[in-house]
Length: 386
Ligand SMILES: O=C(O)CCC(=O)C(=O)O
Image (cartoon, rainbow, N blue to C red):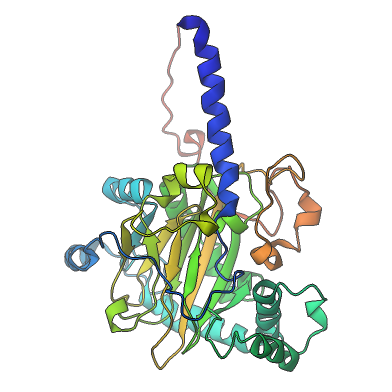
C-alpha cells in the first residue's frame, strides 16, 4: 500500500492541474452569437430564497448602523467580513454584501465619473470595436473602423436587431480618472477581496464598466478566469451597480450565479461546457432589489449570467477584478488551450512587458492590499521551536 502512495499523489496532482486548464472551455459572455430564440439562462434547479436572506441582512445592517463610519467620504461602511460570509463565498462561489459601499461615494463620485468616461472621446467607439471583434470574430483591423461602420457590421449580422448585444464594455477606467481609481485601488476593498480569497495580498487586474442598454440581450453564462491570462484560481470580481436594480421578476438585470460551479471539476473534465446543457446542474442564485451601496462578489471560475434589460433605462455596473499577489501568467506553450481572447483589450497594454509565464507584476497590475506583517504592528509572538 505504502509503495502505491507516491503514485496516488502524482495522480491527484495531475488531475487537479488538468481540471484547472480544462476550464478554459467555458464559454465567453459575448463571443458566441446566441440564436435570438435561445433562452438566456438555464432552467432553475432550485432558486435560493435570497429575498428572505436580504431582508434579514438589511435588518442586521440597520441595527449595526451605529458601528458604521461617520465619514461621508469613506468608501466602505465596513471592512471586516464575518466568518459566515467568507464560508458562504468559499462554498457557493458568490456573495452578496448589502451596503458594503458608501452610497454617497457611488452617487456623488463614482457614477458621475463613469458616465463622464463613457462620454469621453473614443470610449463608445472602442466599446463598439470590441463588440465587432468578439461577436463577429472580425479578422480585419477593428481600429480602422468608425462607429458608423461598427454599427453597420453588427446590424448586417442581425446582432443589433435581434438584441444580441449583451452590454457595452469599457476597460481600465481607473487609469484615467481619480474618482474611479480611488475605488479600484482602495486598500479597504482589496482587503475584502483578500479575505474572500484567503490570501495575504491582492493586485488589481482590471476594472470594467458594463453598460447594459435598454433592449440589450442577456449576458451569456461565462466564468471570468476563462478570459484572463493567469495561471491561478485566486481571482475575484466585485460587481457594483451604479443605480438601484429591481428584482429580476420586475425586469431587473442583476447577475445570476450558478452556485458551486467554481468547484465543478467534473464539468470541464468530462465535457466541453459550450456543448453541454447545464439545465438542472446547479442551484441558481440572484439577489433582488439592489440599492446603491450593495454589491456582489464572485469567484473567477463561478458561472454567471444576466437577463436582458427590458426596463426603460440603461443599467450601469462597475466591476473590479482582483488576483492574489504571487500569481503567474500562463505559459505561452504547454497548456492544452489558450484563454478566450474576449478580454484581450484589457491586458494588451502590459502583456508584452510581463511576458507569458512570468510573475504578474506591473504598474498596470498594482498591489492594492498587502496584509501587514506582524513585525509592523509589534504584536508578533516569539515562538521557540525545539
Ligand atoms: O453586468 C453584466 O451583465 C456582466 C458582468 C460580468 O460578467 C462580470 O462582472 O463578470
